Image 1: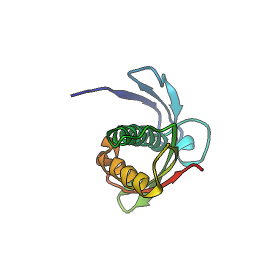
Image 2: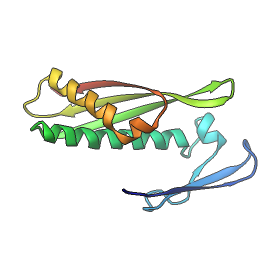
Image 3: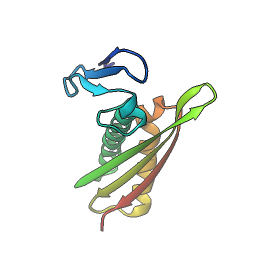
Length: 142
């Protein structure tokens, strides 16, 4: 079992307030966030962006494991996770995550690559925790 943590501090109301997000490792140390960075595209981070980074990182590591078990090693993999936050009757919800993976992996064909990428998508711990539709586009570099 492994446990780690993240933390947030918030001051003020929803629209005029401000916050800071930190991680146990120090990778984020009082990184600013607020309504404007979450909903208006202003500078700063937001929870959905952080979930996207976590999902992309987790999925890519899971795929690296699965590739290794199948006898492949990636020269490089690049994953982007687009996280959709939708307004619903009872507030907001993350309704979808779209993973876009580009990879350079010697000796693998597209069909095998897609099979292993789908397995990683299903098995990634962050995928498992999200109650959202998760889609994947996986392509090999030429």
